[in-house]
Length: 92
Image (cartoon, rainbow, N blue to C red; front, side):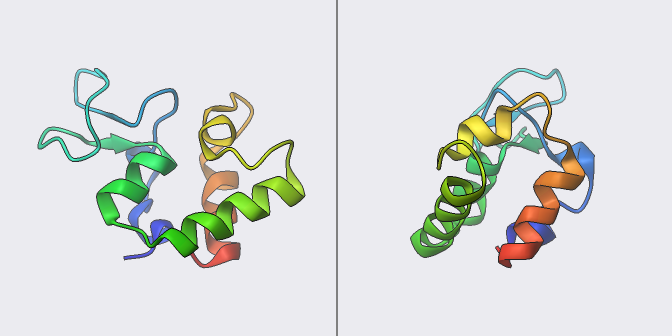
C-alpha cells in the first residue's frame, strides 16, 4: 500500500508523535489501538521500502529546509492536504 492511499482522510494523520490512540495518547505505530499516524509512523506500519523513504528525504532536502521527515511532518504550518499532495507527487 502506498502512503498516499493509507492517508485517505485527515483523521488518520497526526503530528508530534509516531501514532496515537482514541485518547490521543502517543503509542507505537504497530499498537493495536493506534488510529492516527505521522508519516514516519505510517512508513513503519505499512513497511514502506527504504528507497521510498530516501525519495521523500531527498525531496524534502531539495524543496524544504532539511531532509528530516519528522520535522516536516510536525511543522505546525503543514496541512493534511499539503502532506498528502507531496506523497502523491512522489508516488509514495
